[in-house]
Image 1 (cartoon, helix red, strand yellow):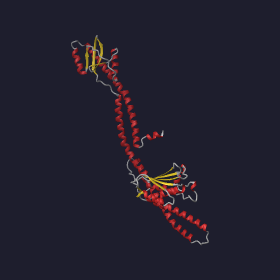
Image 2 (spheres, one colour):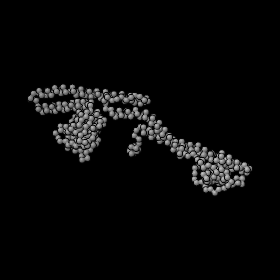
Image 3 (cartoon, one colour):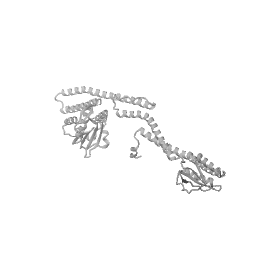
Image 4 (spheres, rainbow, N blue to C red):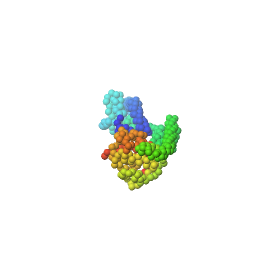
Length: 433
């Protein structure tokens, strides 16, 4: 199945079910109409035509056998009771043009009963046949309003009504199934591991109630797990600050005759440990931060001013943009992305549009196969493992975790002129003002 065909398929469960049931209903209606026409309508039409032919022939025979003075009364009775006109006066009438199948069956039955070809004629709003009976040449007229059963019209009615019944029935049934599933999908899409998620109602059919109950249990357990992880991480990071301070104090109290290079090496190690602890604490605080309304342009300009290297800033659209974001987490994400651009790239530019921030650099870029891995903890590209550009390997992992916690989206693209474009969508649950 091609990608185009897949895109044309109905997207929702309700639409797909209605489509399948509608097609099935039309096929059933078509088969039912064909069977009805073959086994019921066609035989009934043939018998009706044969009965009509028998009435016409019997009327002619009876007229011939009656005394001449009784024939006018018989003609009157047939006209009043059966809408048949029996006349001995022959008229020149045209042949009937092609009509319903019923009249073809009537011609065949009349020809078989009279033993000669019979054709239907038209005139004065009636159908006529020429009959030679008992030495008399008669013309018998009957109403032209006789119609056979029309299978096409019947099929249209059956298919239309059947499709309507199936549509409204499936609409009622599938909505009862789809509505809880839609709620589950929405909750799963917006679930970020927080405890304030609204539990799904555990009602409806047993399978759907079980699904909602298990989802609520899973969401609660994940929320507790993430909360415990964040608390443990924050606690350990906070407690490590005390021995780290003692180590700094002990390092400062060392005798002057200690090797300076050894002291510098210890200081660098302590700074690295302090940076790791700071990252962990900022992450722990950022995942539980509440959104606030901020002015985006001054906010980003303040961040860029903290860098020694000049970073270009372009904002598209209105002169002022406000958004509901978690300020510290948003700052941490932008600081990390811009720092990476400055360290690994060269010339860096930040672009702001509605709900989107891009950090563009002209560095060596990130290979396509590594763009998902760079957001994993402790993953570093080979070219970043140096004393200048090296790091803990947690920066982008923390960025990814913060984005997940606040419903933001982050990705990496190629820069058309060479380098990397890292983009951030921060309008998952909020709208810019």
